[in-house]
Length: 280
Image (cartoon, rainbow, N blue to C red; front, side):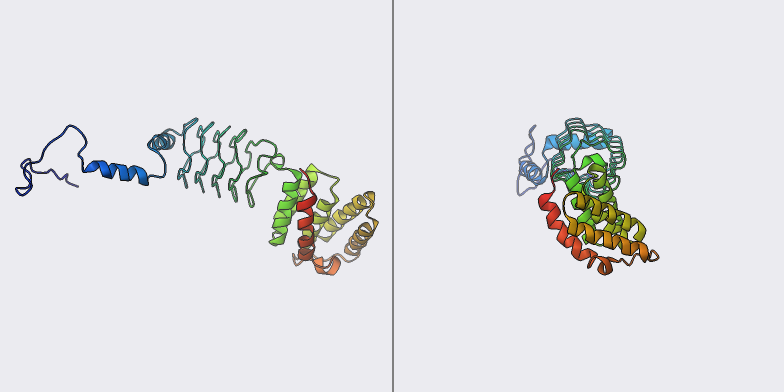
């Protein structure tokens, strides 16, 4: 596009144009408006440009930055200020985010595989559907974040209660394979938790895997009996035996209504119990 150059003589009606070494007065309000409309400050814009060009911006000020779909594989972002930043669907594979501030950041669907998140602040962050395969996280790092549907979540990144309760949430949505994974991780953290064995048994039964479900129910019964709850233990032993005596072909249609009065209904009863009584 051709550059418009005003006549040195100006408009006859307005008189000659007065030149100045300073910024044209007419442009000053425009510059102010542009700065006001920008979501991040000028210094942060420089940091943003540096990050996108060099993939290295340690300690940068990038709060509320828009980095949707950004390609940041291997980026050096140690101690970066990314509070409230939008990193949805961003590629952060192998990125170094140690001690970064990611509070309230949106990382929905982001690729964080093999990323180093040790020391990062993740409170309120949205990690749903993200890929955390091989990521390095502090113990309990995800306890105050949203990570439903995330892949490759390290077992140590969540407390026992987080894992079990997320399994209940998945089961209530009818996502029993995902629920089973969460309950298995919870059992790995606390093998004596009868409620997690029971919950996993229900999820396996809903997938048509009756013999595995029976084994889980029987183990839950043993643990409940050890805790003095003989009535529930007897009910679970009976349910486990029924499954062994009359196994069905795996069809994914579920068996909860026939054995325990409906898996969904039971999960609704277990959910508040788990939320109230389970510690870290």
